[in-house]
View 1 (cartoon, rainbow, N blue to C red):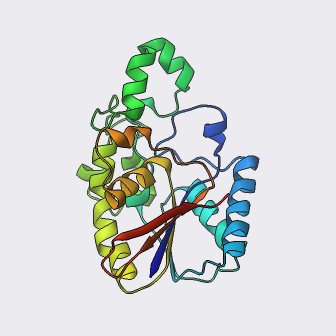
View 2: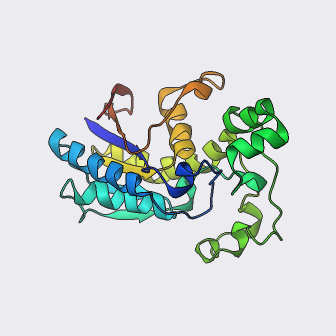
Length: 229
């Protein structure tokens, strides 16, 4: 029986300041560091051992993974970073305070942008100085696939090749996998794993720093889901 553990990164500095973050590379807050360390301690107490680790190319997720592995005495296991696990790209909303955006665009519109499955946010143009096209960590990607904004549907579409190529084969081989990533990339994965409908995925929340554990059988059927902490 294989285990998959998903951890949303600990609280970030922009979570704390209530800003849309997306692909902007912000660090963990002090509280976020504590959450990530606690996740590692919980994993150690639960006796969960991993064979492979994955994270995004964003600092807050990478540090969360490292703290979780360090405090569960597993910092040595193989690790891979991929842009496919990045947070959903919030387009031109990135950097804006969520409360101020609600005043500007209206509560209902901002709620739709944040929570709907298939509505895109205002897009960020490729020539904008904040575009990921200008970020060296994406230099090996075709500029045409670097997003200017994403909804959860698009996020799931770019996460799926990672699942199919990397994670599913490991789980089918009976290996335990840990993924430290972001609220929306992990919600997208959970939607696929659990078969959650487009309507019901709106209600799924991922707490910062909380390990979510899936147990699978040899055919990747979910046998159980639990949370630590």
